[in-house]
Length: 371
Image 1 (cartoon, one colour):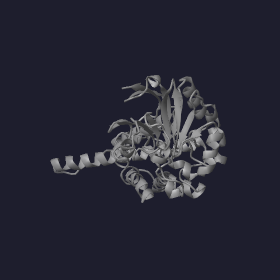
Image 2: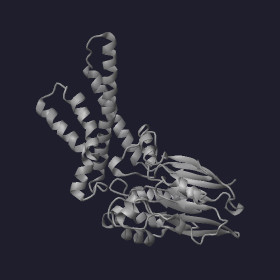
Image 3: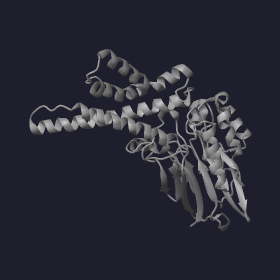
Image 4: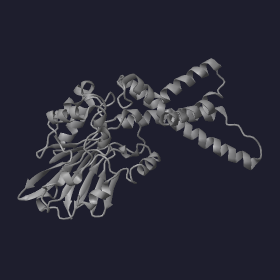
């Protein structure tokens, strides 16, 4: 069903744009076949590499395929709108109306430009986003405490070592107290990504670099990746916590496994286990890749939950669909029964849908404030 849905925009473009062109049929058939292949690039990736989450092809191919794929989506939407508007106008005028070729060509040019721009926005090094979050009862020693929140780096053939090096440099220049990473650091096996993740070893903060797993870690050898992250200097918080102390006060940093863990025969997220033994009076910052269980975390006394996974919905309009699949959460700050959920739109994103329009990536510095 997934692959059939992805073919739908392509079929609309072939039927409503490509086939009406006054071109030789063999050329239209060839272009239509090429577009259909692009629309099925997830399936082709799975057949070629064993997983649709890690296309092991040159970066330029990933960029080009996503640009064309995005252009097809945008053009299909515009053609549907034009067809509906033309049909309504024809009903009002009570005569048949044709959509002129220059309009179709103009829409195609706009769609291609949008596809290229959307890919450029997805592939760039994210800009800094400053966020302040107030926490009731935050000790004075932690007022002004700074966290850099990274998530969904998806290091891959799209986001390679040079991109990672730049993200690490920008992060370290911010001189945060702690660096917290909420999963989906990679797309690919360790053998494929070893060089791309190597720059993460340079991440540095006085209180440490901490990571919780995302769903993509389970696709490519969970144990191997957790061990390698630790070798790179990260402390893994998977149903665990640590206590940061300052001037006799404490702040709890906790993390849980991903919601998909049990499907891969690994421990399911367990917040009670993660907080076992934590000081009762210390504020809790929770790393949880997916936001959907945020209300349950609020009920268990978490003060701030940091999440990713949604990539901010990637496209204006499409973000509403993503929100519906994530208990209404898609990006930004949410107040939930005394807890704050901060849902990061993603430092990177999955290379299988590398498009952003109106939902930018972010490198996020969060400053905690006493309330």
